[in-house]
Amino acid sequence: MSPLRRAVVRLLLPCLLAVAGCTAPAPAGAPEREVRRAVADWSAAPPARLAGIPLEGWSYEVTSVRRDGARAHARARLRYALAGYDTAPAEADREVELTRGAAGWRVDGDRPAPGAPPQLWDQGDPAVARGAHALVLGVGQSPQTLSGIAQEADRAVPAVSAAWHGTWTGRVVVLVPGTLDAMAALLGRPADAYRGMGAVTTGRTGPGPAPADRVVVNPEGYAQLSGQGRRIVLTHETTHVATRAATTARTPLWLSEGFADWAAYRGGGPPPAEAAPALGRAVRRGELPAGLPSDGDFAFGGDPDALARAYEGAWLACRLIAGKWGEATLVDLYERAGREPLPTALADTVGGDLAGLTTAWRAALRTELGGATG
Image 1: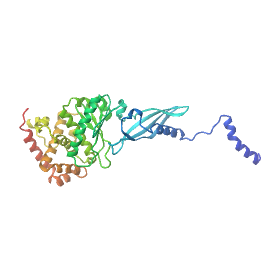
Image 2: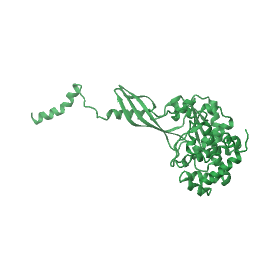
Image 3: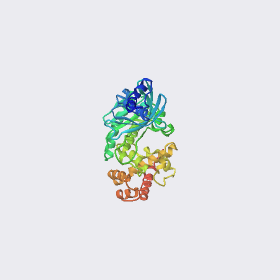
């Protein structure tokens, strides 16, 4: 074959193959890129049913793609923030389901990735109640219930700011699911872990930008509380939001939980004999605790009376520190305990050690609880 003929064949061959119905194969990564592009296009803005929530930075980052013919599943990391409330984004692992049609890949919907907890809106269309300092999102709750929680949270935030002198946003986000089981699903734990509790706080601890904390209400436990009980619960949980950036793995739970209760009771509350009934009964039985509550004493799902004694003892320890050495010293101790060993933090603040603090605490328990009746 002459050079001219070979050149003509090379030019005509692609056209001949196209006429015969043959096409060159697509690059190996093309289908996955198309799936990723479809997810990116679909997630360019939050769903319309979330329009009442002040979302910003909404994005899905695909981490893996699994294809099965005309169907595909994409694992993705959802990131978003609540404008005016979050200083760092919330994150959630999701699984996006897609179908391929004549026009290409189409997203059919998404759900929590296997093993990941749901978002509140996975449980139904959320309603929104706004306060001066609070954003309340609820599913299966009346507008009156959500508005009442927003009002209580609005009272909690200034109380926390008066107790905690560290920097924080001065705002709180409260999630109110429809049932205890729904609450437990949001937190990824069994419902029994939260039975009888009014609320809990989510979020990681440690330095850096404050995480996207949420106060999650147990609607069944919260409904059983008195007005004063609701105030104390929401102030306690809001304190955890405020102190989160200063709280690390070094911070003992007696200090973090005790401080939150101290802030909640600081604005007025019942006396120790009334506010610490479980510990009071133990003291009157002659069962004075040998030491401050350990981290293990605060585990959920165990003996509720023992858990109550741990919280009450932690509160009375922080109350003692604030009363004996001053509120500023208690705050200073909290901040130091998150970044240095507890013995060092105690020496630099109260001028003593854990043994001395424990002795003073046990003496206070005898005085304040030992003579109570009932």
